[in-house]
Length: 169
Image (cartoon, rainbow, N blue to C red; front, side, top):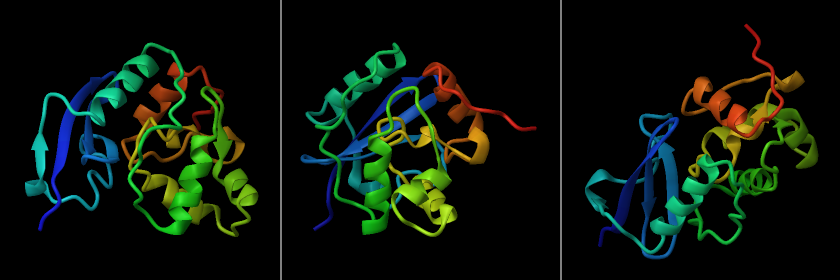
């Protein structure tokens, strides 16, 4: 039997977001057409809805975030997806405070991983954009580097949080 998902769209300053959940978990928040968009979900199992018990609180969190009010998101029911390594990295991302940044290299050091590139791969596959703040991860020297939804959207989010970062041209 095919699993059923509910989807809502959210209009944000960085574009339309797609929010997907089932009856228990939030599966993702993706910027339309970003890399890894709705990864692992099959289109015909997703139904657009106007209200949902998991997605309604997510929308409230996003509303608050875009009004500049950081939220405690630790109680969001995130789907248990991803490899053990990805889950470790995503758990780390959840602890990066609003307006603060960390480098891929620092995450690698803190998690005792030899490769900052491996960290970058896991960060890039984070399915919960904005809520799990992968946009707060920078390259060495606080350089603005890749973001699955586009580096200009990452810059907007960091500016919104008044975070310290460098754009290298």
